[in-house]
Image 1 (cartoon, rainbow, N blue to C red):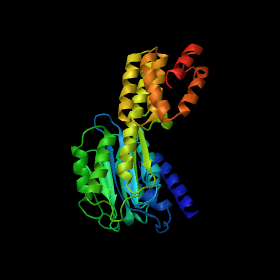
Image 2 (cartoon, one colour):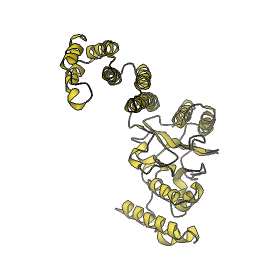
Image 3 (cartoon, rainbow, N blue to C red):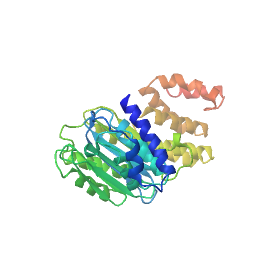
Image 4 (tube, helix red, strand yellow):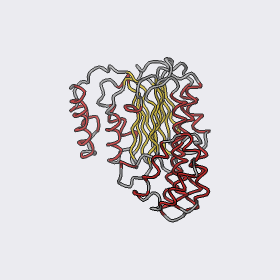
Length: 343
């Protein structure tokens, strides 16, 4: 109850701050927020918040020896910014930081405003990046060592309770040296942290969240990457695997778009890339074959379906249901051929 009341008060303060931006920030916030309860739940971790200078994408990636770290530490909104809130975590830094940046405040202004009303700022570690690439980061003096951060061009890396004080420097170097999109470069930063010793307690969960730099007004679909490993002995290895599957499905989605536009060759090219990326994935190969059949390339599709049915017979049972949904032609002879020639 205390936590909910405090978050509600902080929410009202954010609204007041947006409306009364010309008044001194500390005056507004300090006058309204009462003393906060002592922090009780440490989420010690390492993380990165960053903006891609070429695409404008915004992201946050984290790893911790704590269950489901992504659910409380990582926050991002398309066209607004990204936030990582960790150490003795105050989750409201996430939504309230985004609200302030949405209202036009820079990352530094948003972070300073929230810290100014937090009686336990000395145990917080918080980082923010706004849509313009401005960054801000805070490591409280009472965060458990080794703790620190590095502020770079359009990104910050931060860590606490680490095995070594070289972790955040290694993260920064890896991020700046890595190639690829924002998710790939943030993944490189996490892996560099782990290679440097990472969390002194070990590993448990990890997450990557990436959103577009410009919002189209549909927040429910404006998450380019949203992957989490809630619990496991090697969460970064699993996160890397999931990122690979995610990229394969991006090609599947691209193929669907080509197909919808009538570009069958383009669609099949994308589906083939996806199938090559995750050869063990039955579903990717199945829908590749179904699309090929719908495009009249039955002879090419049947060997693919045969391998799918051998690996998982239930997909054979599914296939006769597809014509009723418009996913295969209403053609009894064609269906008979599919089922007989894939045995």
